[in-house]
Image (cartoon, rainbow, N blue to C red; front, side):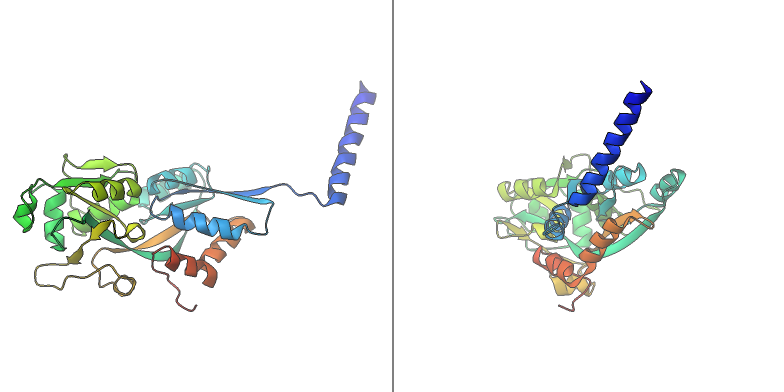
Length: 289
């Protein structure tokens, strides 16, 4: 038996040495989870990052910002994508697991309000938007539109976009407010699902990140109040914070992450990475390209 073990150890050493001599390397990987808003952006980053790097694998999955934070807290992902700031309770939960969090702002976004292209409404105030999603108005004719019931579409509660809209629009930035979406709100599993429903349903209204805008739907102008100008969610207006529903886009990692994760973050913030932010219809934080 001892002789067999000795031979096995020698064989293992020999195989390891052989692998080193041939220059074989184990596959390195990064797991990225979270926000559906930026999942397409991060997927493009991943595809560009691994070009000419055949030993690197990057998995990118959505599910919402809350899903990404849960995975980071439980140490089942390397990077969490988010369209909202991490909450204090999430930071505390991570620290209980001896995980300390680092935040990176990688772009800017405007939360755009979508209606069907046949809807005659072109603009709303934040107060009108609040009344719609809290079901204080029921019919588009109350806002100058057609005589038809309003169908409100929201992201699910684990979505950072859901949380941001609730805090910014429904609760008007008041951290003590308890206002919630109307129970009639249809909770959709993704931003794409909201876009698809609005494009087909003349009654519907929903909110998504600006990367989901195209000619199949109408994007409304939004005013802070009835005395303010109605502002379109253009890159310039979002960069200048003129558009009233603007927000940062974020990546979160453990503090002092492994080198491969550092390299990916550096790529996201590089000129090439920020150009991809612009090409995927978000607003880069760097404009030196």
